[in-house]
Length: 436
Image (cartoon, rainbow, N blue to C red; front, top):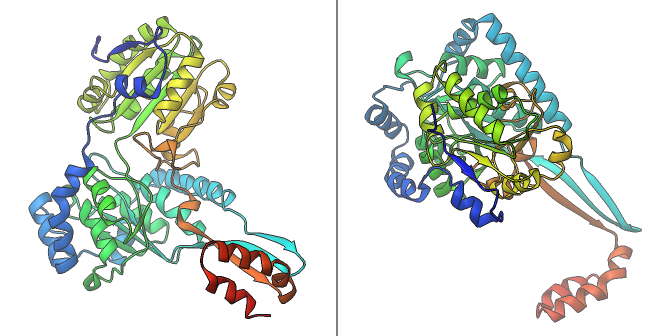
């Protein structure tokens, strides 16, 4: 690996958002351009439904996806063929994500403002969701778990999954993905990939029993993100997920082998993945360079990981102090933030922007990808500055209930009328006065 991953010295720099954006740019992805290119596809699917889905799969992926809806028998066979050790591991993941989701379920509230004046808030699940499980460069049964479990805990009535067919399986989805859906009791699974899946969820495909959904969640490539952008408003979305990213904040106490392994674990996802180390230790950078080179030689997805590490979005960053490093982390607002310092908890208290924070040497990001109990669908591309990762809250809506008695209304009637008159909306005031 040598010096292919760049080393960036920012010790003499004043850390600003502009500096971080310039020196640590994300991979170049143009969602707007992708959106323009898929507009005709979305129109095709809206007009022609299943016919368009079959035609697109043949043209783009070279597979026949019929029947588009996965049968109960196919789901049962996939579950029956699931390796016992893998099944146990998936069941542990399901249990842990379910327990965390249940603990994160928000509570209903009620406030009495005066005698007979009550305002309550309750949480209602969306009626239906479409969960997208990608299937490009890897197999993602974990994404089935991360999307389905919080939706079930929230109480969503109608859950559908779309996942691409695979040439290796004769145009059918990966059996492990189907088995995981079966483990979770999801009956509506469709062989649809990419932006076509988002369109199918948004418009519905009556021929295959797919009704339009209220919300679409799940990660995907730039075209999936583009479809979400174009159809947002017709459907709600979780986020426009981009390539995965990790930023590691480490000091001289960090284990260079662990740091290198964590960088590689995210770099192997995609050539566009970002792997960033920020440290105040020159020695650690030298050691991590050596470890990355050594470990990369034994990495199964070596070519993909190497491409990500030597690209513009990855770097080993030297800073003068941990305070400077924390400032970079907050401006960068990474998807995964790993803190490997002498006191990770103290550092975490100064972090404001991150999708998920992993504390200490034995909380690696790959644990969060599968079995920590947290959710791995997280904001990317700096969206952690203003959005959250997927969770039970994603599938809920807050509704307010207003319950006033005649006496309680009379006590504020004049106040309402005064504000209504000031805003030039006299009928608002009349709706109060007519009651007295």
